[in-house]
Structure formats: structure tokens, C-alpha cells
Image 1 (tube, rainbow, N blue to C red):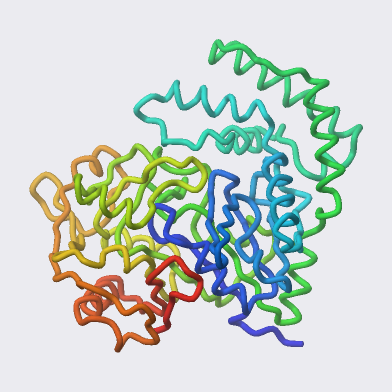
Image 2: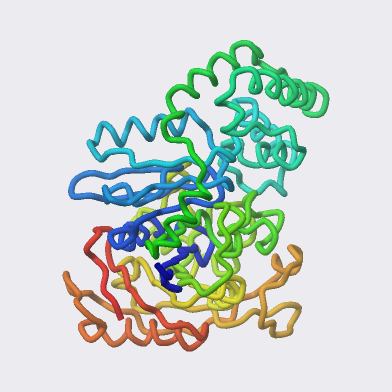
Length: 428
């Protein structure tokens, strides 16, 4: 069967993460055969609301509510087996089933990676990225050092014991001699614990590449779910205030192990405002008490950390940059309901740096720190209907807001989310 060139959809956060990707992925999952995570780890989180139940997941993809979807964790994801097993148990408890496939090439987060993450954050001080301290950066570092531990190693006791010894000793010396901190782990205890994990996750492990190639050849619909946001990409984001992986759409092939060098549907998710958990500069940051009001209405607290998210006005310069990085075929706008009731809403349409107008996001952290946003102020919308079928049912102020985003970014908005419920969306 000849495959459909548009059977591939990629969902990417178009801002700083926390754009509502979980809900959007769940929306698309209803018509997908495979949902694939291709980067990051349990430092990302997504919340899925089903009736009176709220599911918070960090590793398993968002399509858990659709039993016919195959949920895939690709090789580009780093896996804390304790977190993974906890999520598997949660799905079983909720009687949702676990239609899960884990790449045998994915790397393992070890307990000492989590400690090193804490030590790194303390050492980096004001240049620390605001890490979730989940061990993500250290495990990616071990991967590049080439003494990382993979799922495939874990499934062979002799090989895992041998490779663990190298990783264990390196990280022990790192903690004791570089960070000058105690290393409170026993090689035997870690080995024993991880071999227990192996027995639990073994039924879910397989060759992701073979599965996805077969699915693609059959024209099945494959949805790739990104974590974090485009501006947290380790190469293209505000370095060093980034995550430790590539979060842009170009990472899909590398992080899932399948060549898809052809047309894709690449969907960028953006909120009607900005949120940011890290310590880096946020030019459009809003001051209290309005910041506090938006945070409470939008329940802007990290799924992984519970930390209060910083709040800013939507930044169209940054959104346009994310569009350039990813080649979005469309945008989806979320949480427009949160701004309901504001008499005025602002949109950043340009930057001023040292008295000069700047049309792009600078790579230099020092320059970004000095940016002054140039705003356009629009009238706010006083209320929204309880149920919206189409754009014609929206107040004119919201229509103007949507139109401005489309004109500035050069992208069409295809879907609007106006509430936390799965059904509170409408297509344009």
C-alpha cells in the first residue's frame, strides 16, 4: 500500500513549554494509530482531564485515553524506570490499559544522575536553567560520554553489570572530586534494583524502528508528541536557559529511529499568553497583581515540579522564530479563556535593544536580557460562550486577537482551545 504523505503529524510546543500539548495530543490521538515521544524525559509533564479524573503523566505519551493507539517511547527519550513503572501502575489502576512500546535504545536515568542534577544546579548558580532536577542533563551527558546505560543493556544481566560498573565509578568520582559531595550509593544495591525494574518493563520493550516503518508503509497515522517548547531547544533556544534535548520538529527522525524525509503536518501549540518556569529572561513578564490573577485562573503550576510559572504577554517575535525553526504547517491557540474579562490585552510585536528596533530573537543571552518589548494593545473580550462551535460565535475582540497572530506569524490558526475540558475546542 502506498503511504499517505500526510499520515505523519508532529506536535511541538511553540513557546517555552506548558502550552497545553497534552490536551491537543489527546484531541489528535482519536484519529491516530501511534503516539510517539521522541525527546526529553520525566522533566516534562502533561495533564489529561477525563470527566472527574485528572491524569498527570511525564513519560508515557498523551494518547492513553484511546485504547487503539500504540504508545511509543522513542530512543531519544531518557527513562527513569521508577517513574515509568509508577505511570504504568497508574494506568492499570484507572483501567485504561497499557498499549506501550519502549525503544530498546533509550537511555536510563540512574539514581545518581538525579543527585548530580542537584549539584549542577547549585554549582551553576545564576546560570542554572531552573532544572526540574530529574537527572536529565547528567544522563544526556553520559550518553555523549558513551558510557550511558540503555534499555537493551538492562535486559542482559551480565552486560548490564559490566557497563554499570563503568558508569557507576565515573559518576562516583565526579560527585566526590568535582562537586566534593558524598556519593551515597552501593553498586550492588543499584544493580539489584535495576534488574528488578527490568523484569517489569521487559514486556513493553521492542524495536521501535521496525514497528514505525511497518506502520508508515501501511499508511497508518503516526503522531509525534514533543515535550517542552521550541525556545527551550538546547541548540536554538536561549542557551544556557534551555532543556538538555532538541525540542524542535527536526528531532523527530533522530529521536524515534525512522527516516521520514518528506512532507509532514507540523502543528505548533501556543498559549494566548506566555508562561515560563526557568530562571532566564522573560521580556514580556507581567507584574503582580495581574500576573497572580492569570496564574490562578489558568492554574499555571508545573506538572512535574508544582512550581508557580512566570506569566507574560504573548510574544509574536518569539512565536515567529519558533515557526521558522519548525516549519509549522499550522498553529493551535490554547487557553484563550484565561484572558477573558481583561479590558486590554497586549501582544509583543517587536523588540528594542540599545535604542534600536530588533526584528529577531537574539542568540546572545546578554542582549536578550536587555530587550524591551514593543507592544500593541488590543481590547479584551469580556466573556465567552459556554460552548463554541465556530469562530463566528466568538466576540469580535477575540477574532481580532486571533487575526493579529495569523498576520504576524504568517501561519493559519486551525484550532482554538477555550477551556480545560477535552471538548472545549473548535476548528477554524
